[in-house]
Amino acid sequence: MEITVQDIIHHLTAHVELRDNTVDQLISGSMDQLVTGVVVAFMPTQQVIEQAVQQGANLIIAHESPFYNHHSHTKWLTEDPVYQAKRNLIDEAGIAIYRCHDSIHQVQPDGINEGLVQALGWTSFLEQRKLEADILYFDHNFTVQQIAEHIKRTLNIKYVRVAGNLEMTCQRAAVLVGFRGNGNLTIPLLHNERLDLIIAGEGFEWETPEYIRDAVQQGRQQALIMMGHAESEASGMKLLATRLDEDLPGLPVTFVGEQPVYNVL
Amino acid sequence: MEITVQDIIHHLTAHVELRDNTVDQLISGSMDQLVTGVVVAFMPTQQVIEQAVQQGANLIIAHESPFYNHHSHTKWLTEDPVYQAKRNLIDEAGIAIYRCHDSIHQVQPDGINEGLVQALGWTSFLEQRKLEADILYFDHNFTVQQIAEHIKRTLNIKYVRVAGNLEMTCQRAAVLVGFRGNGNLTIPLLHNERLDLIIAGEGFEWETPEYIRDAVQQGRQQALIMMGHAESEASGMKLLATRLDEDLPGLPVTFVGEQPVYNVL
Image (cartoon, rainbow over all chains, first blue to last red; front, side):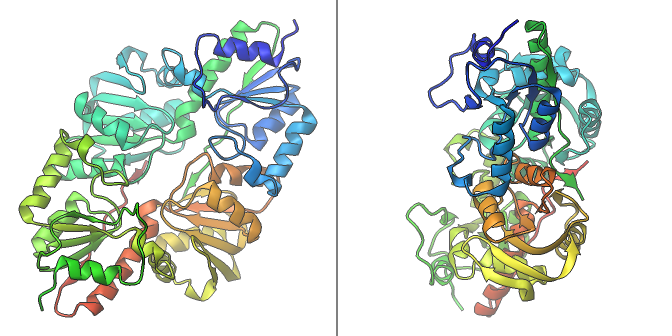
């Protein structure tokens, strides 16, 4: 079966209308390139690209940019040796990289949220899928610590960061992936949805966690688990890989993961 | 000695010209209020405000906003119970809060950078003070792990996050405080200043640490220590408190610290 990069992009974006300033784009390679295999990843790191080359795959579908900025700008990097080496590897191996960011967030339900809640085994706790958050109702009284340990165990991650009291029990939580951990989203949710707990990927340190700190100091029962940006979004890309593998019989599709980008010391 | 809030703001801003869109402003209280005591803090948390009330201090000079967003907007928070309780405490106790963010970064040298490098005992390693980073040259071959442990011990913080190889030895490092840990600042510095190591406060997870991950995968010797936003800036505010205490004889000036906003689990 002859499938081009363009065919796969059509498949990925068939049910969404991308906004004008979308970051979703073909970052390297060409639309008419015949696809020999697909690697799906959260971040197209050097290691992910090397792995694709080894596997004989020439299309990487990644949620984030390979070039260390959300808009994949490269002009500022032209003299940078790490960028140059990465760019050379991509070009010499003929790897097409397609950024699949906005489209997977725009489908209903958000494919990244869906993958995370599924990976956590929490689909039965779903009360409401909002545009940028899933609202969960736990039918048991889990403590913050129990939920944090569950997240670490299920997603196989080494650490999470927690604000608030570890012994507090939670019933109502919101799950927000990626960089949706900022106060403009989390603080209205906490109040409007009467939440005990925010579970998020990444956000400014001076917003949500400082709100939680103040809430606790005022005697309220609220907490925050910040799991890491990649850790909150990789499961969604893994789910995409599984689906693509079903949709593209005869074409090898694999998810390639990474270690957490930070070690805690 | 009768000192007003206005007098102290004049003193703090005497040598800088604040830009039009500065975030530095009197957030509560009034300019002509007589100051009974000064509390200096990184973040004017609920606990810091309570401590000021207990100490009989009615002016808090803080680096960050009390209201969980950089521009101290409050309209979006009017219905929020945590905001309401904090606002009531501030108003009922008659606490003036002055945001001292841009002015302390604008003085030469940057007062926040100066406080951090001094607290780390690294003033003798200073090679160059750039506008947004201090460049250090270590005259010993310290490993990343040794430097990370030194930071934790000296600043009394529980954890730092590290990207790169812990055993790598470092000679040239840049120190960037607060939210200066993003790629637009760190990546050109790494190249132009031939750095082994970036030491920063906070930054997007998809920028600097992912660059370091790729650099290491390419066989380069580079690393990143991310110490936390508050952890990188509190020493600068502490230094400001010491200086204000000397400049304002007869008026009690104290620095009030906070625990790290996150626990790692």
